[in-house]
Length: 115
Image (cartoon, rainbow, N blue to C red):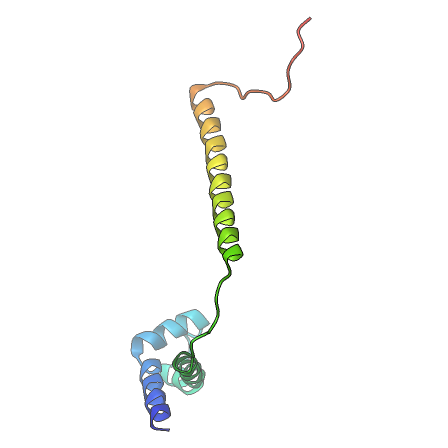
């Protein structure tokens, strides 16, 4: 129970800082309201949010889980495919930019028949 009170004090302290309240006013678009009204309404929600966040982090336990070998191979394949797609796209755009800067026309994909 003592930890809960400490966390409540930390959350209250964090939500009552002038910098944080001014940022919240800008984000919420409540610049016409006084800082006091923001503390009365929005501060409670932030207290609850920070308290929940700290309790969630403090209450986590180790997950007794593992990744099987097939998952590792799948992740590596996905990364290599992503890098291949990025390099192909970059190469195509680089070639098009290079041809445009040199004044060359793009190569056509179809062959023209000459009689």
